[in-house]
Length: 511
Image: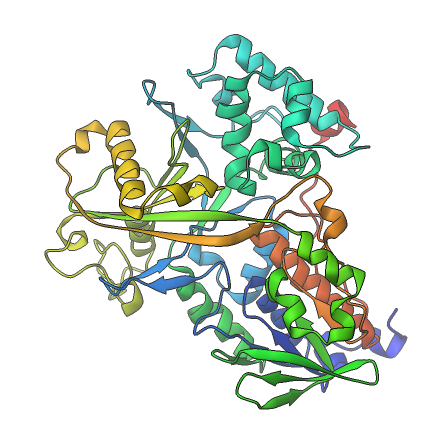
């Protein structure tokens, strides 16, 4: 614990002078860099790509020049550390919290059901919306209710596949497909037979049962690249952090059992006191000294499996729907995000004296977010939709054109009044190793943040955080790594945000 002198000093004064190199400019690395630079450490962030963000990043569309995200990333209300990170870096206003969700029924029952909390306390706050879903019979709704109750009360003494657990709870195939899979494939990007009971329980308990706010979804209203460049980078640089892109690291250098520096791909070297390795798990071994690559904690990373996520971007000459988002039941399409509506809401929230056009689909003050040229859709009242397909293993058997055509067909079936809308352009982006698969026993393969080398920390959603592969897990890993660095400097501070408090009624019913 800090001594009395430290207790009377600010964290910035305590940490001044120590040099830290963070390898990787994704959320995990940026969270670690933010925590350490704001507490006075001299931080250098090295990112091999031209942009920050890692697997949660943006690209420039080759035909339109528009900045689009490789996949739509969202955070739930239970993601407390991610929310704290956004507040710390000043980008919280670029995320819009949804007070209601929209579910679209299966083919033949394509009714849109509004999903929102009632005034009842958790875990009953979402019950009325759930009961309004007409594609479930009364018996199926009872199955789901008993399943949720059993999941909340499960002591988790053993782990198994969630499919196996559901079968044991006599959940029908229809219920498994239309309810359990619908929620978990978006949250964990895997099929029910490849999801552990522990990870499934985390999603449902923390997200939907234990608190009134846990289910609420926050969606970025601008491309992620704008979040990183206009806010997060600025916040880090304000605290003196040096952020370098196109600065790939070839290997870490070791001397006397400690990391002494990093060698970049251009042959240059950077030395520091502490190091945070925040790259995808499959790149870790390539950067470590040979003697460390065979350590059991590192060797276990070879056994982590991954899952792909595909994102289909569609530009139309007229709006298909005014909904900001929608979740689809029993379709190839899983989530639709209306980038035009979400972007326009940024403009509507602008100050009255802003120079931004109030009818623009994006803030034209930022050229990376400018709408399509006149005559190509958005300026003429068109729209841009992004459809996410998680656990996209089967898409490898389909061509990009076939996937785009299928998604377009599903959207038109849901909103038949849009049959005259012309599809101007479509593009599919697949992140082939988007997340690690939350298989039973996967947590035993995930290392803690403190590596076997004292001055080297691991950070990434693949480390042991208690969370699955999410933005929350990534930020938590960066904060935990930063806590270790600070602790090694003699200062103990908890950076990871506390989880949401469980509602009193939930505790009474399930404790």
